[in-house]
Length: 268
Image 1 (cartoon, rainbow, N blue to C red):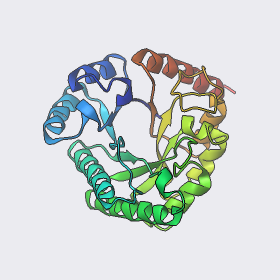
Image 2: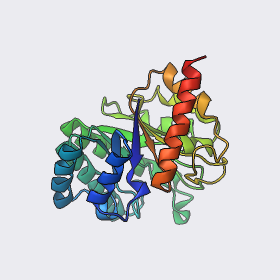
Image 3: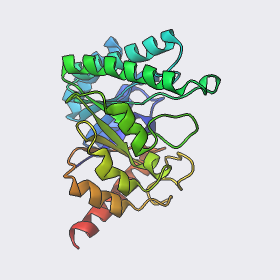
Image 4: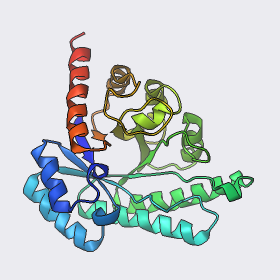
């Protein structure tokens, strides 16, 4: 398993400064969130290719999500969302990044009585995204979401309903441990999520108390990380565990805590 770090730690910073911190702190992978100064436009992609070669750090991509909704009742918003994800897929291809994480949609309050239409829109957008991913041979990781009103993809059942009718070897799950803790027991999510599509293809790690999506330091919440790690080992998960922390300090400290969990588990 590789330890990665998300752009969420340093989104306002430049790509150069961010990559330097990733490398200086010995993270093996950088999850680039395509937002703000880290957006995967042609100029940034060219610069990131050079940085990747210089620092020898693996990359994965988290597509844009601010102000977007693949399930929107507004066709223009849906199109903008899909095109934004396609930009991330194309960027991932150029950067040899094999996974793009995306968010499912949400149910706006105005359309609360039209959930079927919202779900149909979400399916249509996801299907279009997956078709493009197949063209580029890029894996899509559909992320489980925090337990907030109107958000799709919070529970195991909700994710299964979203993904079940799309048959593609390029559609899997990004397992967000912190999000799962707001919806139940994260360890219980692992086996079920790994049965969906291509299974768990990427993972996010952060902590909380089970109510808010706090992105707290590992150990500051109530997540039983040893149980989660055991379950990940049971499914032979060997991909990236990406720290979505509030600071580089929290990410580094969290990584050391998780390493201690691994040592204890493997010495049992």
